[in-house]
Image 1 (cartoon, rainbow, N blue to C red):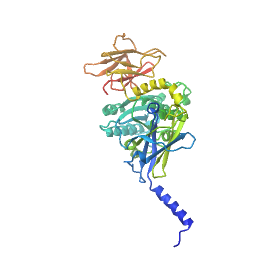
Image 2 (spheres, rainbow, N blue to C red):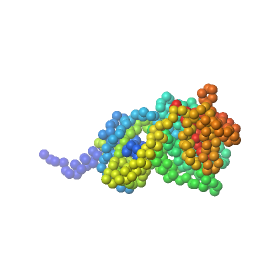
Image 3 (spheres, helix red, strand yellow):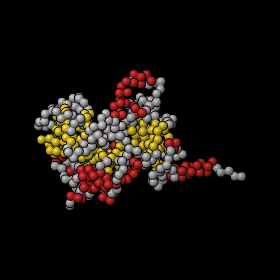
Length: 470
């Protein structure tokens, strides 16, 4: 019997490999979250699997994935076991989205970059229209969504919530900014959005819509920024803010002027960049992003102790030659105990235990009281962080520059110019008011009805209202 030549055998194997690869499922690592690794000992990975036609693949199991890791720049080692697993579509706590919309001057041009013939045909109007469509399609799901605009400054319209009506209302009608507010602080806005999600539990996503490049106020004018002073935000600031929080960025670049660093930031977090030239391409895009996130598999693994500041993690799909990798900050990741870090863990037992209590309280939504409360974000000058509102009236007295804000939960402090009164009305709704106007979610008015998660500006501090029910 005649045997095939070695060349024919080699060619056949090569052809089989090519066909096998072309017909294999593809895997993409869409997020890495190591926020709670010091507490749980695990890093959460999020992965999406698609078939050769691009359709999402579901019904895979933990044993279908292999995880490897190594300090950045080194070759990944042996496979590490997946110790915690959630199948595609399983999101008990829902998803958290922050929709970040460019509100700079160029957003008020038409889709083609020319002066818009009508306000409802601007790029800003299109972005709001897609955001409204997305909110409507969220329906009664457990997903939470927040809204923010950015130009020269960052403006929070609504912190993440399930109240679709309030979110839709706060999108409002867009209007062109004045010249001082028309700059594009792109990287600063991404950092702000990441910070705004730091207290949110669950899978967190930023969806950004922009029509141009970073156009920083201080760099272009030579003057100090009204909020950031002389700090010039760079792309790596934005990337670090996202990676430290385990947040994935999806970016929509509208028009011909595109920030290339924005693409690098998004892809480095596991996100995708969508280049859009018209309204038809934009329609339904946010919903497709949500569908992709819903199809993610969550893989929890225990990192090996290395002492490296940055780790590269690689995930392979069993039975295929396809793999995907991302890099994440691992400066406080101990992983599985070993002889190299046992002594260090013993020395750090007390501070780590304190950190666990703090993280669980902040990240798992624990409350020390069931009554409504006010929480100071980034408190200035010390003082209590969370204050329970023990009566129907609380007085907030903003401090001078560098001084702490005073919060009197029993409403006993005198009310004077600049003080803010948070009071429960006969209708059961809480309201914030001030004779000089109170700024809630970056909107100033004499009196504002408060919803859970609203942010009150008091001097140099931001204070979050918790209704004790949500």
